[in-house]
Each structure stands twice: as structure tokens, then as C-alpha cells.
Image (cartoon, rainbow, N blue to C red; front, side, top):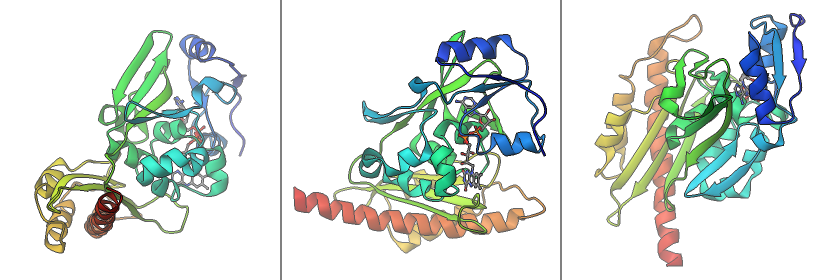
Length: 296
Ligand code: FAD
């Protein structure tokens, strides 16, 4: 199949791109094209105007500032994957990236594209939820900062207005000495996950759980942060009993069913993957505590 006819725009600045989005009906933004082009070829989407962001250098950046990772929307997934800063300060993001498609798709695919495409089990959306990310939208009307839970509003649907584009994302960095995990179940390596679970754990000086964050994706239209489960973990010992109780609660979360995967199976995966993620994050948190002790 081939895409329906469209007018191609090749802006060199964010302002130019915003001008096109503000003055043309039925415009779509092109980033890495790894989701949009197949959808256009299948005529699942038929934009009249295609606004190519690939020549706008200002949308591609990666920096650590004010205790956060600041990432431009056009930053390639592969660049994030091989970044020393990401590896050192946010290893859960690097671990998740290894599950995103294939190296070839990560070479072209971008962080902004993945978040705006918003596949329910996109790994990058999961980690953005886990870290409490804020998305920075921009239009001719100005800039708007959107907390992730207010960004993902429905199946493949964001709260971006038609004249807005995503300029960047701010991901708060976990405190040093944390443990992390990203686990998923997918039919084949490189496929979108059926269900994925990420976790961050920080231990206190007595080895108890000081802080816990969990993100589950693939259960419904966007990743969920089960706040009650996170709260229940705080103060507990990081042991099998605590993780079994957390996993049992995860299995009670709302889950969507479809012709390919039943809601019950998704809940079963939520249970299994939550346990695995917490167990792995706890082991890494203990390791981090020993390293911190040894290095003083
Ligand atoms: P595009 O495809 O260019 O755009 C995607 C959507 O986002 C479009 O609607 C576009 O208009 C919009 N958009 C893009 N950038 C912006 C912006 N800055 N502002 C506003 N709107 C914007 N993804 C996973 O998460 N996990 C996987 O396992 C996975 N496996 C894949 C396997 C294959 C074989 C392929 C081809 C893709 C796979 N993907 C997977 C999708 C891939 O990660 C895409 O990169 C991602 O979904 C979209 O990123 P992109 O930069 O290519 O965006």
C-alpha cells in the first residue's frame, strides 16, 4: 500500500513547524517514521500535511540538569541506549530501551515519537510513568508542561492539541543507591510487550524499603503507577513475602482483554512480572548499598 496524497513540509526551526501546525488542517508530525509510516502506508492515518521534524536540530538533545534527564523529542532511541549518562544515572531507561524493537528501528525511532504514538505497552511510556516524567509541548500559543498521567488520555491518544508538538521530556533521576528492574513478556524479542513492569527500590540504613515505584504497562491504554502497592511496600523488609503481597495486588488491577490476550492472562502476567521486577530491583539495591558502603 502507499500513503494517501499529502503535502510535505520540511521546517528548519520549531517556530516554522509550529506555524505549519497552526495554519494547516489535518497535519501530522513525522519523527523517526517507525510507526507513522506503516500507519500511513496502511492508510490507517491520512494526513493532508506531513511536518517533518528531522531537520530541526533544536529538538534533539540529551543532558543531565537539576537532578533530571532533559531529552529532546527527536532524540533517537539508540542515542539514549548508548549514552554514558543514561547508563550511569538512569540504568532502568537503558534496560527498557533494549526491549524497544530492534537496533535498526531504534536508530531512527525517537523518544518523542514513541511517547506520542503511545502504544499501550511502549517501554518508553512505561519508564516515563515510572520516573514521573513531564512532557513539554509547544505551539504558536506558547509552551505547556504536561505531567505524564495528563498526557496519556486514551488508546493511542495524547492530550496534545492539533497545533502542538512535543518539544522535549524531563525525567527526574532516581536517587543514587537505588535498585531498578525492567521486565516484560512479549511474543518475540523486539515485539511490543504484552505486559511490562518496571520498578525502582531504595533501601534505608536498616535494609528496609525506604521508597518504591512501580509502573505496569500493557494492562490498559497507558502505563499505570499502582500507588497503593507502592505505599504498602514502604517500611517493609525487601523479602519474598512483601513481593508476593505486592504481586497479588497487581493481579487485581484493571486489565483490558482483546481477541489476542484475555484480561485474566494480563493480570496473571502483572502478578508474575511485578514479583520478578521487585526481586531484581531489591537485589540491585542491596548491591548498590554495599558499593556505597565500600566506597564510603
Ligand atoms: P513516528 O513514527 O515518526 O511518529 C509516531 C507518532 O507520533 C505519529 O503520530 C507522529 O505524528 C507523532 N509524533 C512524533 N513525534 C512527535 C512530536 N515531537 N510531537 C508531536 N507528535 C509527534 N516500539 C516500542 O515501544 N516497543 C517495541 O517493541 C517496538 N517494536 C517495533 C518493531 C518494529 C519492527 C517497528 C518498525 C517499530 C517498533 N516500535 C516499537 C515502534 C518504534 O519504537 C517507534 O519508534 C515509535 O513507536 C515511534 O517513534 P518514531 O520516532 O518513529 O515516530
